[in-house]
Length: 77
Image (cartoon, rainbow, N blue to C red; front, side, top):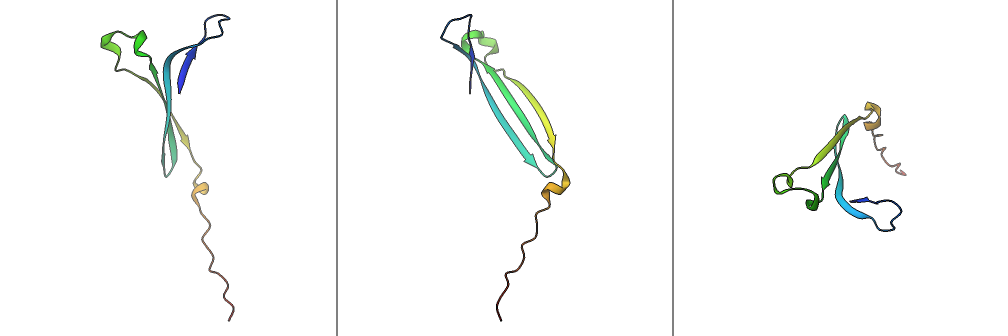
């Protein structure tokens, strides 16, 4: 997803970087990570391979994983 920067009242916005959102789900919750990367135009040669990440852990209640057991179908005898 591009990140735009608008200067003043100018109708055009410039792309200054990108943002990616990723998540990892496990038994007790999940992690959300947002990765921000500046456009190579703004960076010198030594800093083009860096990104900034923000991570957040979200807990899930144990009861939310309790799936109801499937009931056997009623058979006419």
